Image (cartoon, rainbow, N blue to C red; front, side):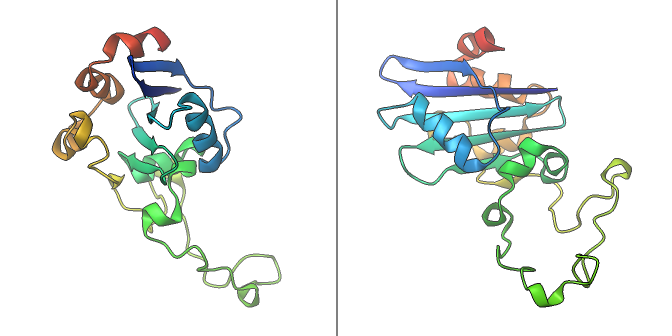
Length: 174
């Protein structure tokens, strides 16, 4: 089960809303949703969690590119919401790599395509780092250090909300 919340910082403090991700298919869609919540280009945090398996924080500051932190890349890759956050840039991949049509086999697969394994057996994509990816300093200026962010566990979003002083606000949408 997923939980997603949007926290928008306003002049009056943080405002939370339960974020429905059913219509969000790309990071760009998520950016539009977040920026609609903060018309004055204030900071917006999108918090996503999947039942203690992984969590992600996406930060939007005005029109700047989003900053992303994902607690476990391999676990997140098994989820459509996680895949949305695991961009080529975040993973340090070349987005054009493997796009050469000349390497396609007759059955439509690429020659030499790596065996991605069976995620159910724990054999995920070997190109994904095991553990966190992204910007661990994403919440430093808001009171959550890199060390604290990396050490969060089961109720990561609750702990982040507590550090931001918005536990009650987050609980209203949970």
